[in-house]
Amino acid sequence: MRVEHSGPGLEAELDGAVEIRTPGVVAAGALLAVAVVLVALNLRPAITGVGPMLEEMRLDLGVSAVWAGVLTTLPTLCFAGAGLVAPLLARRAGVGAAIAVALTTLAGGLVLRVIDGPAVVLGGTLIATAGIALVNVLIPVVIKDSFPARIGLMTGVYTAALQGGGALGSAVTPPLGDAFGGWRPALGAWAVLAVVALLVWLVAARGSGRAPRRPETADGGRSLLRNRLAWIVTGFFGLQGFYAYAAMGWFPQVLMDAGVPRSEAGLLMGLVSLVAVPISLFVAPLAARGRGQSGWIIALSVLGVAGTAGLMLAPAWSPLLWSLLAGLGMSVFSLALTVIALRARTGADTARLSGMAQGFGYLFAALGPFLFGLLHDVTGSWFVPLAMLLAVLAAQMVFGALAGRSRFV
Image (cartoon, rainbow, N blue to C red; front, side, top):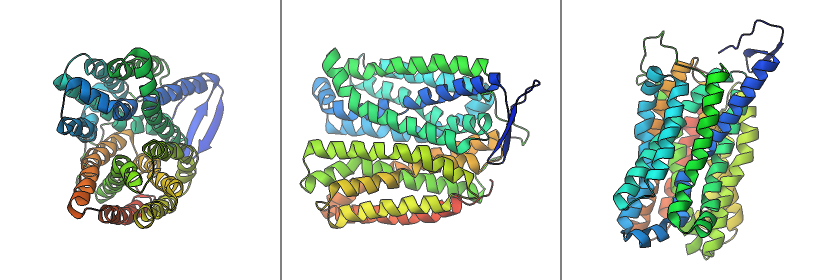
């Protein structure tokens, strides 16, 4: 999308896109960028805040481990289902309105899940994560259409804010529980951040003129289900998600079984999330400016292989090193989002590709924690499930190398 202005201004050309910049346009773009960051900060606390409070929730609600398993699995499954619906909602309501609806849904779900018993908690979580899933798919469309000259930079900023929000959720929720008297106010308090993001988003989307209103439909709403490149991008997204969700769910237990204290294992997993923030801020923009992203994807995947192999062969030798390497490998997520925006020519195709990659990709990723745990139960050791993740990383490098080539769906 080219931003036009009739008055005098500064013309900037980056990454092959041209943008006419005036003080008004720059201010509008800055406001929209702030809105994107605030929206991103809301996309993980609803999920990561549950883990530290889960045992307290189980005792208070009197529920089983099966219920807890359903609660922690719901977000990934919801990401898959809502991801397939998001492009349709965007075409009918417009991207700006769809994101506003998604934030409203998120805030409502966060409040709902803390006001009653186990069934309401599950229902509220389902509603909240449905809102998150819609935003997951639609923000790449905003970046593609509203920041065409800075796709890599804005994707990096968005991903860093998303990951930072995840770290905030796990770190801040327990103190909130201590301060306000339990898991209900601690988890419900995150609705305030969602409302703030909604208000800023409404102002930015309505006043700036930069936020895309509706993806183009000149191509008649073509499907990407028969597009080979679209399936390659989907495979890449699903494989990196499979690894990441298995790692986030099980690596702390792998470390604890190797003799790492529980508190230290938790801190190491927090480090895994934080190490991805600078990678998102610096690597994604650099990768987007190149002719392709394959080299970056392979390099980060190799680091993930090294960390996983270390946990498999000598977990107690250097837990910090293995965690750092695994975290660097998981930071390929920012490149997965960058690839979605770069492999499509238009906002319409970005919405379709984002919905397809995240819809089917998250459905596949949901298998990661389940299969990892199943293989451990069957074999009685962590060697086989970690070997499975090495095979996943090998496939990720193949799909990522193909997805990173400069082509369009």
